[in-house]
Image 1 (tube, rainbow, N blue to C red):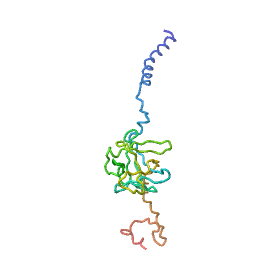
Image 2: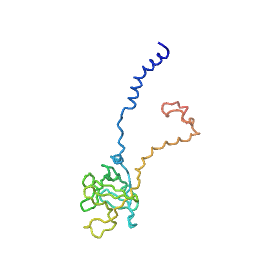
Image 3: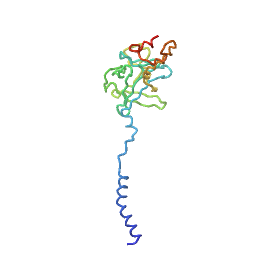
Image 4: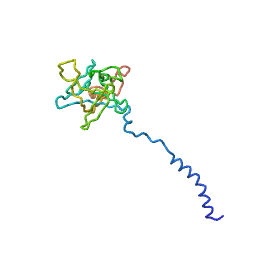
Length: 209
């Protein structure tokens, strides 16, 4: 058998191996879901819901410890909210400070509840062209409106602002670890200015001042 025939024979032995390697490399793999609608599942954001509808009201939505919902001019611990996606386009809103869910009654009034009720506490988030959002009760279809600062008739549903700008909110900074105390200056008048010797008990009287 000539040299050329031996070379082709050796190459022929590699063909099955190369075929197996190529088959493994080309084997179909599942493609991760890249749908923009599904990437928000379980997403959690901390935001301040700010509104300035028609420049008449400038306030941040606040869920207070007693369950009332109001608007405050400045950001506060009770106005920091956690927006969590329940499903595409639908969220729940939780007060970080008070651990109360933002809910809406059949008359449109807002309140904070310690328990999550899917019927009352789920809101559909709609993005407007100007960057503001509108939140609607998923069950009732009513818009989430900030209670007006002053209301002359408590029997009427609130007609306050309904456009909100979610402003990024940061959780409180963790407490800093206690600092290391600086060493006391050496006592130059002592026989042991650098405190090289242990406590006074059990040491030679010659080290006492």
